[in-house]
Image 1: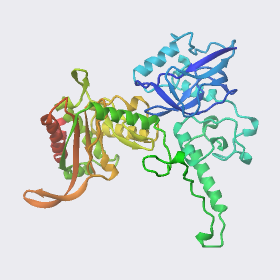
Image 2 (image 1 turned 90 degrees about the vertical axis):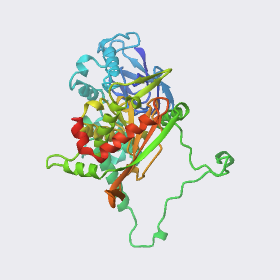
Image 3 (image 1 turned 45 degrees about the vertical axis):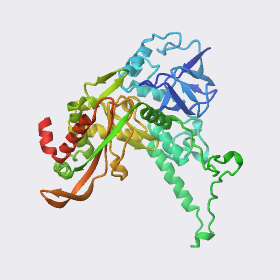
Image 4 (image 1 turned 60 degrees about the vertical axis):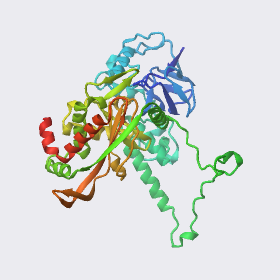
Length: 472
């Protein structure tokens, strides 16, 4: 039996470390190739790490909450010496074709990061990868035969293993306090899927309602949960204010990445802000006219994104990078879209946005923002932007002086669209008005360029039909 050490693989897009959220295996467990062994959170996404080795877990190199650098030991596995050659790359065979395929996929930005690492070409081709992952799951004990869909294990006994492939399912269960070991999976081979967790949550709620005492309406007489204790010892008092500390939130994962990026932006970029109020009435009318019985109208953000891309083609200084003593203007636009999620602010990126029309942009925006909010976006989808569009109007605010998403050089924000008095042909009328604000790096251009770009986008919103005709 030989001991193989699995190091944390390259997670893509220059990410150098990941926080270990929790282990999915324990010392002594038997794992197969591609079986998920750990859940980690990078600065961009929550992912499950599959094992490239089959065997018995000998050592876990870290505990939940530890930050592990790429290339550092993650897991040690005792593999049988007589194991057949299944194409698994090892530290002694760095040039194995499967490992090379993994590296090439990651470099190409395919999004196939981690998944399939360590499998042979026969496994990764077509639907073989999914079959390999199903085969990698440990067999359930005879006493754990599936019963009703999504039902809780008999007599409340936790199962020995949990077949869950989706980080979203794990996050849902963790947020609701559901122990996945007690949930019967309705997916292939007993895989626990989203509907199973939702059913377990509903079942628990029904049990709590059934257990609630009846026959009285005096709420004061009912027992209530004790309030969370607030520590008042000297060690739990903020020395600057003298107030008790309610909670300490570690600055890790996405929150730390946000802090690092925005702090660097403030430190390095001499930014300036310019803004303009815009009559968006014609834009709303155009969107309504694009609705059809067989398909919905594109979102307003997609229309604005099309104007932004066109504006960047006319004012390329705002779609650039500051590289030492040079300014690099970029050919093409990777459009970032600021999205608020439960994990913090992330920026999914529509790559090649300059090649897409309004409906194609709309489809990509919806797909990427949904994936980002559900924690399914890959590192490739959350990096590589050249300009960011921030629709902070969805937060119910009118304006904002945003912080540039370093290393980009500008960010455009759009506030909520509200009915306001507006002068049209000398008459005060009610129009749908929004505010655009552009924050730009003063090193790459001056106010004339920034104002020209902002005015172009504003004019396009006020006269969207002629603008779109010109762009065709």
